[in-house]
Amino acid sequence: MERRVRVRFAPSPTGALHIGGVRTALYNYLFARQHGGDMLLRIEDTDSTRFVPGAEEYILEALAWLGIEIDEGLRAKKSQIKNDKLQIESVGSHGPYRQSERREIYHTYVKQLLDSGHAYIAFDTPEELEAKRAEIPNFQYDARTRMSMRNSLTMSAEEVSELLAKGEKYVVRFKVEPNEDVHVHDLIRGEVVINSNILDDKVLYKSADDLPTYHLANIVDDHLMEVSHVIRGEEWLPSAPLHVLLYRAFGWEDTMPQFAHLPLLLKPDGNGKLSKRDGDRLGFPVFPLEFHNQKDGTVSSGYRESGYLPEAVINFLALLGWHGSGDKEMYTMEELIQDFSLDRVSKAGAKFDYEKGKWFNHQYLQLRSNEELAEMFLPTLKEKLAITNDQLPFDKSMVATVIGLTKDRVNFVPELWEQTNFFFVAPTEYDEKSLKKRWKEDSPKHMTELLEVLENAPAWDAETLDGIVMPWIEAKEYGVGIVMNAFRICLVGAARGPHIWAITDVLGKEETLKRVKTALEKIPNP
RNA sequence: GGUGCUAUCGUCUAGUGGCCUAGGACAACGGCCUCUCACGCCGUAAACCCCGGUUCGAGUCCGGGUAGCACUACCA
Image (cartoon, rainbow, N blue to C red; front, side, top):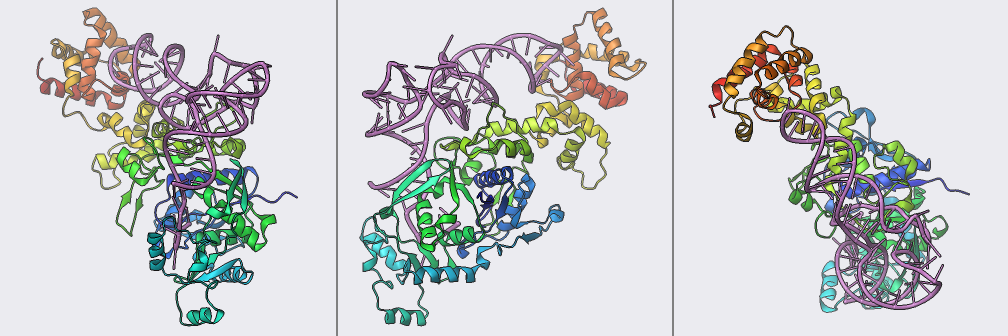
């Protein structure tokens, strides 16, 4: 019988969600949707010392922004996403979905392992362990060494209960049987075999904070939550055999999830895992949303705030380590769900190709309507024009028009400002390079004459203006390039921008003439 | 150090023994378009890590090497 597909994304609330984590979440989501299964979100907060306030909200908001929907577990309340304070809701019958709220559950299973002899209690302090490691090179807490340590295997039952009664801090360790080849079937890599000798007696539970470690919690939760496939980063591959052993110790091997270990996202230059530092160093975000870390006071830039469209981020991320069945590169979420397949995921790590990310954003930007882009551009526009209230001195449709003329030359919404600023503010200075190349000796004369031609224009549409200016230039034998470029400099302040009649159209007659006059006064004769 | 994973243009990748004279995309470069800058379009350059083996035939399978990465915590 086919088992219902249930996958989980299980981040740790230790800071902003890394872009690699976003990709893991995406692949899980695509897999779940394709198979008509469930996408769960569980918070793995078993390390009380690394908890960062706001991280949980951040993760859920980021996924919501990207359109990665959660079916079960913790998620952002839909109606609340736009509000300042994000509301979290918990859905599903396998909760709670925060590991810190599942303590009693773990107690039961720790006890089960203890009773069945698969685990034991250890009293070695961190200091003692540290000393051991310093003393013995490559020290490992395992079958060879456990009998020389302070644990329930080496101490009498009385001694153990005495220490326990005294409230001595302890941990529960998994008792790994030596010299056994453990097979892990990975959906991406095939059969991986590791000998249990290299595994250590992993800490499963620590009494200090009454919490399990990742290894125990994730097995118990995945089992209880009926997870069918574990799709996670490659950094987990070395501990996968341990997880298999745990499923076996619990007697859950027949319902053990299938594993798929994803290749890592690598830094664009050099080698190694992509890190927060790389983003700072190379100037691109490695997080979906801007994050203000309340714990260390740092601020990390995000894709959203940098002007990225969620669909572009999704498409970009999807193709970093996965390839569709054809040469297609532009994928909607729906198409990704259709075409996704774990056996088309690459095995090798992928260097983070930020340039391609820009290209994707450019593509998706062109697909958005001018009105939509105008709305998104408003914050930048207000900031640049130093407008504090909602009184925009321009018509919104004018903003949309201007964007329509320039959007094909930008990758990001905020870049629109560099392309459109002269529509909103008359030039106060003139680009030197442009002047040198395009403002000739005769230019003042040309502009003065052009002024008169334009004054007398019977109408102000592109067709009319073109119809009178071009013949005039031809009759005077001035040269189209000479006149038009000088004219352009008057209006724009530089030799750039859209078609000149598109500019005059937006500016209007009065403003156009005014700008030419101003330029005539301000630009020194060459 | 140990264990594991991985290895095709600068980058992301296609390739599952003959369709490979190794395909696509980003970036680069050149041209076209044009009143400018862009966009766009067209084109150019650019790769099978090395050595063996299997086979009539290997980028593709096998072995060895090399390199990179990951893991090696009372972190996830």
